[in-house]
Length: 347
Image (cartoon, rainbow, N blue to C red; front, side):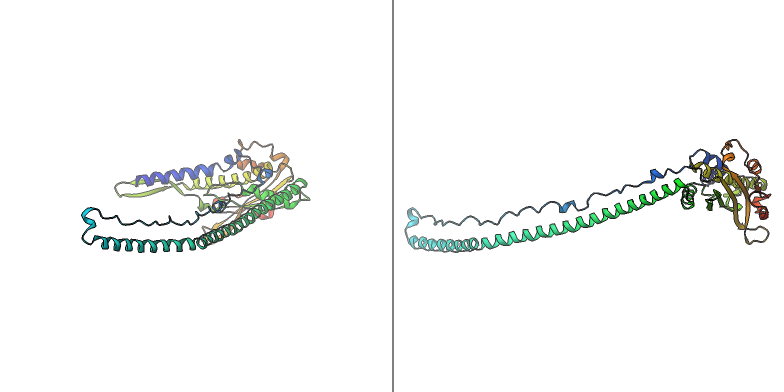
């Protein structure tokens, strides 16, 4: 139980650290996307049927066994040659000769059949070798097709990249929007505070209209600390004071606003975007009605030339947004929206 408490408190600390550093963590990284580094080269795996590349070994030709020879029975000696043993010997010779003739006939039949057996052996080897070559050809064709598909996919990616680079060089709206999408899409926010975005670019005015959606206030943990009560053998949690909850959520929203402006302006090295009209909104349960509602929490417009002179490591986000003439909700935690009639420039 104590280990579980420790893990929960560690998780709370991590979430607070990540949310409180939404802006500072972005300032430590370069949001620029190097398009040239995105070029791809098709990577081909080794040919997977190398076993088919080796010809089948030639079979050892069938050969006839050694020709059988006749061996006469041993001749009886001494007394063994008397008393009728000559007849018995003659009978043994007849039996031995008959067996030899039978064995020799069988051997002759084997020798006669040998050429046909060798032919069948050779034909079987040829069929196997033909099958191997056909399978090898099919495998190589499939491998070449796969390699060509990878090459085509790589070429398509690089062609699209060339098109984007060329468009971005002259500032076409489509290219600028695609690049901004890559910049913001690569911006990693804490899992507890995921930010979505939508935007459009006006090439004539060089203004980016950017809307980002932040999580509702209840996305952040309200717990201050977890404790294990031994007497009750249970885990309890103390709740953060409401002011602390309000302050953390408000700070996160304002940091998101500055982070969005910073990442877009810094990543846009071609200076295609001269102004950003930014709104920060959220959607969640309204505490008074229990119904889902949306609210715009920040509206601000920033000029590239002035914003890039700011040292965001030292600013107070609320003061920076006020300096830019932005409009900020009086109570983001309760999803009190700004007056939409004033627009992002506060007029």
